[in-house]
Length: 262
Image 1 (cartoon, one colour):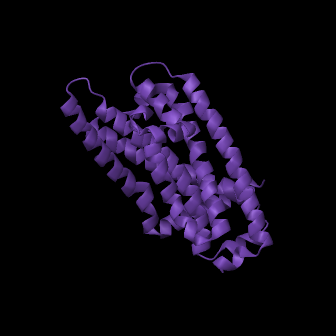
Image 2: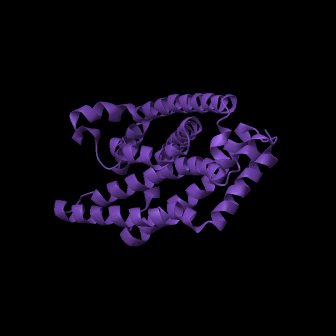
Image 3: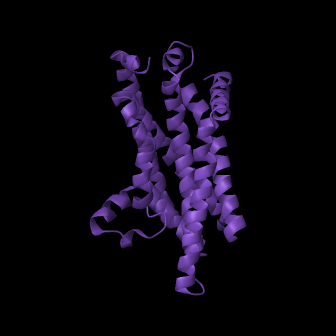
């Protein structure tokens, strides 16, 4: 793998971000809106529940950690979609650039977007509601690591779907996460959900990550068993996503689907 080509891909995505103001919507505007919305709801719930309520902390930590998934997923998905929108996909296929180098460059750029997006949420939460996510301590490191891999895996699945069925699948870049957020119990324990959905929620690795984060937020030690289940599920998801996008790319080339984007 050529590190020079990886950096070239990251620089190209950075150039697109600089030249297209609408791309800042996911990086800046959504984080500000989410922090304000869920922080205000948390304050209201805390006032209703009385002293000692953790409503603000639970909601803000949930949306902040979910932005780790969102920003990592959306950077991979929209990075690929930019190539289809600009009709640049054919150019990429005939260059020496390898698939793993393209994904690595997109992920590298995604880390920069992640730092910016999550930083905006964290700053807004601290300035407006005096909430500091770093109060969780070192437990935040494995929690964020698992969520990062989940986001990248979902992004690869979206790319595979676009390769297979065309640009109509682009809405899934945002639509899949719209389902993952409530099913993961980002703001509440799974047992408050409808009985049938609880079984679905417990399969998702993100559910166990958010549950572990709430335990740490309450002042207790990180439940490594819970995080272990999350890591195991994330590993399975990552393998399946890589296999899926690889197979879809092979079909994409073999069946000449490039005509969809040129």
